[in-house]
Image (cartoon, rainbow, N blue to C red):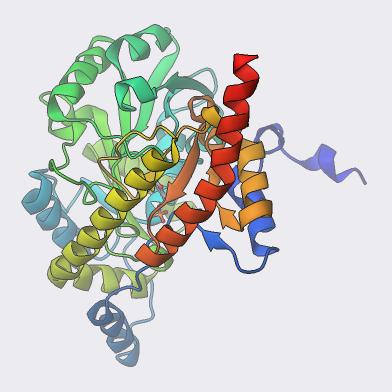
Length: 397
Ligand SMILES: Cc1ncc(COP(=O)(O)O)c(C=O)c1O
């Protein structure tokens, strides 16, 4: 039997995750300092873990309603209103998902299909393109640039829109660039979206992790709430990646449609995670603020470090990634990451894993300890300085 012939064309079309492939290499190397992983290095706060343990002791091991525990939906709506002034009804404008990941997948499958184009703001989280392809749609790259602080520029978006464009998917604060969009920037994008009658999938999982200005959501721009599927979750903000709790907020008809896919494929998010999320949202703000304070200190350390090494690095204003430009070394990003790992045992992610716009950059997560970052920067410096010199000399000849 030829197994390949039995696989669906869409599945064959999508590549395995570039991050995973690279990290198989990292796992095989001993003594590595990893700036590669996209998850908090903090353990979920104890009171959150304890609430879940307590629920297990009480025998809470059942399914919940498809859209998630009503109590949790109410709590998420309260939290989003209080934190970002976003107003949604817990009854029909929200559903709890298995991480933001599931929400991205079912949002795309709900609105996009064969013949549609989905505009993907890049560099971006690795799942958008493949999920659009799995939905049968065609992903269309909309690049962002270092010169624009990795903001989405209205003219770039406009140039990529065609009659087939159905939706745009974007993420601010951004993984991998750390770029953010302020309200004024979002207003210009919203005008284009309204003019071309598009929907938006707005992945805001890093909304809490901003340094300086408070997060602005496109759903809050006039006329945008009905056009937006807002996706978020507790993985990053509350250090809860393993609990797999995310959510989607949107127009009741979109949520009802998303629920159809969710109830036939997932049924509901795990109850233990939902109980833990409830506790985190109610009583976790203090610990979250402490984590953000730590990320901010590490952010300053890593950006200064790269600038001293001679790698140009835009100042990330959100999430927990630095995205230095490594073109001065003369290496392309995959080669750079592989050689760096081999020579210095520091793991970073090649920028092109996140789409074309990431070419010539590396993603360095600073969700790791201050001392590990200091050591990593030293090793990267030793590796990079001779390369920069060599590259300069070659260009001078
Ligand atoms: C932008 C972005 N969206 C979604 C996810 C997935 O989040 P979750 O763990 O909630 O599925 C990630 C994880 O790295 C991410 O960076």
